[in-house]
Length: 114
Image 1: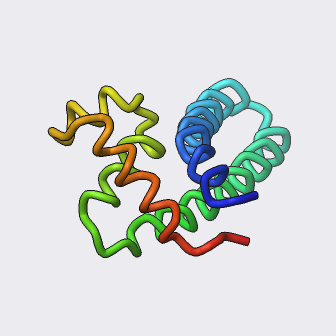
Image 2: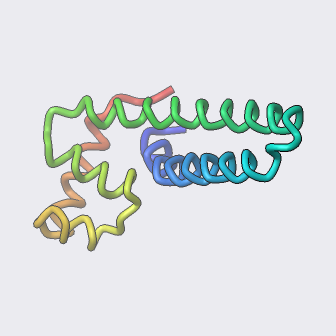
């Protein structure tokens, strides 16, 4: 999986973490009278959340390693927040074309991920 694919997964990872955390809270309410069952559900959910958080941290660390503030902001807005390019351009106060160029240059600068 190349860096762009990993970045594309970031928003989905964020949404999945939130969803699993909400589901875990619901499970705790629904299964409070069945502690043995709840323990297994909690353990599975917490392991999956931890795995996703490690993936998220790996990608965010790569983004935060960039020296250029605009490059970091472009990646965070587009990949972490999941904003379309028009919204990113509005939020950052640049033209979409300029941000495309920044984005392309940024992807070329990032080291490959394993």
